[in-house]
Length: 486
Image (cartoon, rainbow, N blue to C red; front, side, top):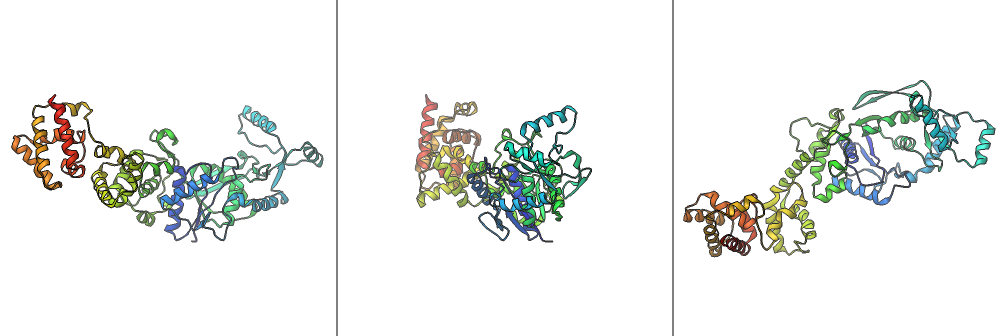
């Protein structure tokens, strides 16, 4: 089996989550079978398409790690790969359909079409074009031309035919041609419509499998009719389920970020996003859901793509991303953290090699508390602020206990006289404070945590203090002592 698949986005905005999943499924299918993955651009929506969106989409694909063998930027023997650069090709095939009587020029105005739709709706029928211009006389054609009407090209839909699609995901699906109506394949400005151009492109580029979202299923009978009109063999079709929000409605902005670019900017790792996307409609062979791209590629098949809608669960994405963050090498995580820390005004660029070492210690300390890398700003703020003040009620209650001043003073003395401040020495100091004051661990650790970090929960103190450093630790103990002594 020679596999040739494509991802063909319309460059009218950033790469949507649904589009990214379609691209991923095509890429995985091609890589699993040693086939070819093509990226072409469907930019015939002249008003909305732009190169900025195109570059955003391509950059998002690159970020996800999805390389392509043919297409825009890469080239190939089946180009060009932008539809606006293929207009003469579409014109040639449209002319063939016109000459064979399988398509015709339609001069109906928008008002006439609107009236026709209203009349059909009033009868309880499906609104569709009823073929008014199928058999125009020479006189009618001349009259329309004299009026200056610019015709569209409509495909002549055969009557009383059933289109059967043997979908690789949805199995057998059928459509009646009587409900379709003659549809436009070339607009009055000479630009082809999606359903016409996509067939010409897929055939000429020898696409073997069309893997796309379920919302395209209703377009498929129109496309199959064009294949049949030319006598061309059909590709295999596979329509992947919709992506829904947790409330089971179609995914939208109210469910969270909807584009890959937004997740890039929030500091999600591409390998986590790929892992998450593939689970939206596909199930692995085993129970382990955390998989490398190579593992996914080895297992991927359309047989495991499910029919039921996929649910976009942000909590699951956060869990997956946290798993990948914990596995990620600290130098790379530090590289990812730096832009957020710089933008927040915490770190000046470039950083010295000595300061870089400290930053890596900070990232290592905090990575278990991150769902995404943008959270590094809030999580690390206590290490950059000159002072910290407990704000929640629980922290204030802890600092109000009778033994707190003695604990703070004793800890200050111990830190001040320590010759070395690493995790082991801080552990030893904490034990000494409790022993010398005859206090249990909680009565020592909790007020010290609040005094030093301003928080009740967080990383272990013996890990925090070496990263914070002796000077800042002592200053915070002094500040806290003043507050509780007044």
